[in-house]
Length: 274
Figure 1: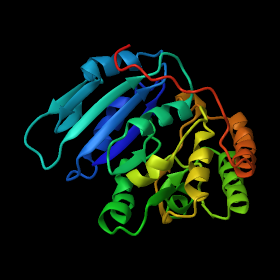
Figure 2 (figure 1 turned 180 degrees about the horizontal axis):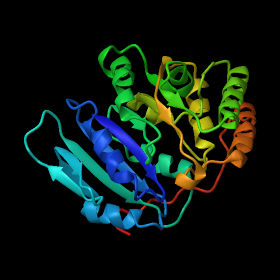
Figure 3 (figure 1 turned 90 degrees about the horizontal axis):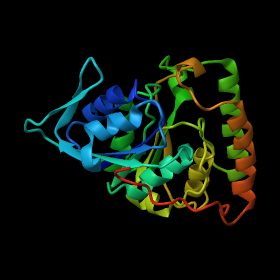
């Protein structure tokens, strides 16, 4: 089974289409979608409560209506889909949402998905193939830079390209493992890898912490594949900004020099039915 972790904050407009998109990929594979609402205030939480009542919904695949509703096609299918909803009582950050989702994941393969439409879940096919079918990788990162060379990825600005290149390059110098795109959302890995992760970073620094915890043991087979990407601007709901880039550089140093991960406040158990 493939576990899909989706941290959500104020994505009522895009979430229905994202759920349909991730459900249609790898149609022969059983999937578990874990939605973690991180204190949304735009109606996202209410939408999830309506369409995933009691925090759990199982069916063949959802179909999105024009009005943003989600209908379920329960006809016999080659695989089953389960959607689980978890809720943070207040906004705690993307890293907290990812940590909650990873802790709840039960699949033998896990992937992280944003709740917007910047990434295309169709790119999971080669990632899943390397891990689950060919068994030649434990961890597969997407690469927007490789996708950009193929014409399939579009960053929103030169500054975004430069910042991601700098962070990835600095990571390679400090950790001895070269990633072309360490900040990419699409990270897919086995259950065994997920079981070793212990995320304490509540914000966008989770991308650095995940990568540091994956690389430092020197035990996992890691590779990258090109992915498509269509960046959105702040007026469209993008939340990461230049301050997060500066913090990422600090996190690179912190996770490198500290044998232990930072002792941040523990994450409370999220509610299923707020």
